[in-house]
Length: 130
Image 1 (tube, rainbow, N blue to C red):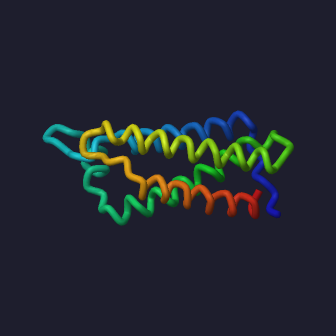
Image 2 (image 1 turned 135 degrees about the vertical axis):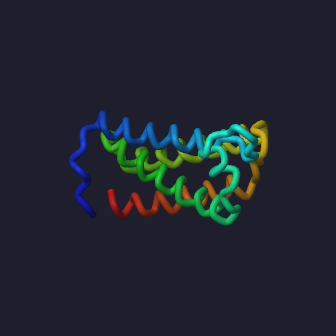
């Protein structure tokens, strides 16, 4: 086992919640760019599909790891890792559902599955690292 970084619990929350906000913003940004949109919207709209699919996996793996790290005060590793996994899966499912209402975005079962697979990979990595 690796020794965890000596970072205050408050800073852990700030880091994790900032990452959550980034995930939400990326997920609700329209998938169609229009004249006058920011460069950010253009980048999201023009990210190739294979890169988007890879990002689902990587982002949700990181999300589980961050939540497991942030919730370190929970003594039971089983409960801590279960909560980290459930938070990530719940967020991913909610965002996939919401994307059905965002222009140019599509909430899909494939994306939800990639989120779940990423979360599982993140959970396995966190079990080794934390």
